[in-house]
Image (cartoon, rainbow, N blue to C red; front, side, top):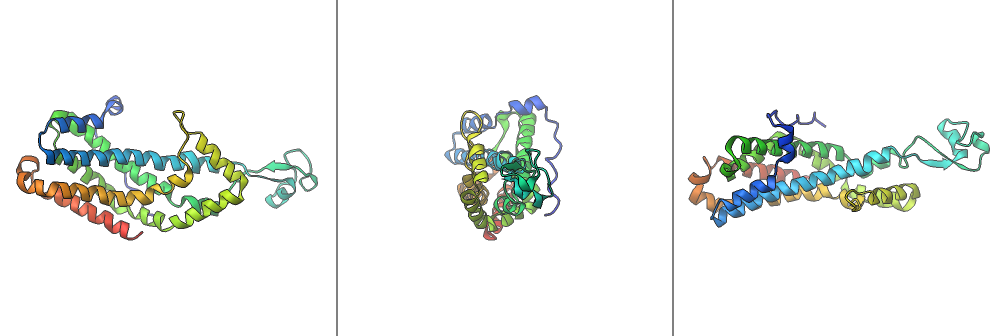
Length: 280
């Protein structure tokens, strides 16, 4: 694919400030500062976009860090007699491989490269794009809160942050077309490998049980479906925002927006996402 989008624009954000930043506190403060039902609905939509993006990034990172990378570090166990086909003459038991009746570990993963590619596709591309997206959103929210104060942040400010972030990655959304177009085959390959390869099935179950915070990690079969559902959810979330905001903006645009350009940006953003979704 094309060179990945550059990292989030440089903004002077203190590391301690970033760790302590509470996006949900921001949206709560915005909701409490208005008595307008229409504006509250828009704020709720903006909060849902941010919150769901955080959850989604955690999910796709779990595919890579919880399954894909550990899979590359597995060691396939084969009958010692098979080692000669891998260029080894001596097995793990210091015996001539062709005479030993035991099993030995190899430096090969429990799945072939072609199987790994079929199951995971270009998930690392997807992770890079969405990690950049979330980083830009978070960094710019921190910047706005720092420069204006949380109590002065408006709906238009959040819209501008989202628009800038999606503009930064919009030319890379085609990674979803590639991922989603191979998703059905990925499902079939995963199911087949789990049913025919005991070592892989044991690996998947082990990784599932190794989730943090005392809870199991989501199952791989569930995680690989997340990018497919996410691309359509973008369209739903932004369409919902537009639907809720249009009549409101028509009446009060001068109070909350500098111009209708912000809504036009979101409309264009939604069209781009729907165009990508139509390709899958």
